[in-house]
Amino acid sequence: MRDMRMRLVCSLVVLVAVAGYALFVPMAAGVDDRLTDFAAARQAPGWEHWFGTDAAGRDLFVRVASGLRMSLVIAAVCAVLSTLVGTAVGVVAATKGGWTDRVVMRVVDGVGALPHLLLGIVVVALFPGNVTALIASITLTHWAQVARIVRAEVLTVRGRDYVDAAYLAGASTRDVVRRHYLPAASGQALLAVVMLLPHAVWHESTLSFLGLGLAPHRPSLGTLLDEARSSLLIGGWWTLVFPAAALVAVTLAVSGLGAALRERISPTPVRVPR
Image 1 (tube, rainbow, N blue to C red):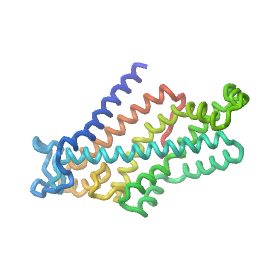
Image 2 (tube, rainbow, N blue to C red):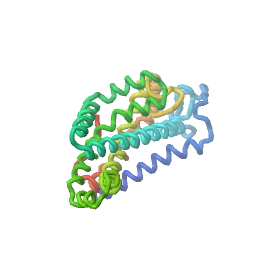
Image 3 (cartoon, rainbow, N blue to C red):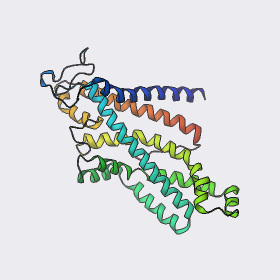
């Protein structure tokens, strides 16, 4: 219990620090991080530029914060949308039962069997640089595991005596879903949002790194890592280290928070789709 609390506190501290950095640094800087200054290009980290500058002379301390904010916003939207879709599908499958449950779960199995990254590449390749397409590609490939977990939770609740009593008292299916099924699945849904967040960050970063996600002029962790390749070859290590460190920090903080939350509300582990 003590280790869990310590993990939770450390994860929250890191997550708040990272979120504060991503939110307030671009606002406090008061400059447009898209403006170039080639006279200051590829400067190593120092007092003037804490994270150094990139190939276009832009301050990486501000630019990494802007990229981190963009990646977190996109990942949060994808995690919430995936959870909503998965929760709706899982509740419908468990509530209807019979052939509806069988058909829905075969669809879920089919989606879960697809290689998510490859499917995401196909989707965003049709609309390169489109934020909506990027969000859709991540959302539509990450709801299946949530649907399975929610369905299992609702099936457990459906066999309880108080649910039978509610039906005998004249409650409609909608009332039972609203009063019993959704509250029972809410803990798993919250856990799914937390566990999907770092996974969505990595997917967004991977797609943008491959040049298929956000446009190069819109900073995200993926576009910054993509831009770092040319500078890294001539010794600009800082252009890679600081965006990568931000990506790792977010992953460890949210994963630690998710693990602590899982120990409190879920007796079985929630595995994030790969």
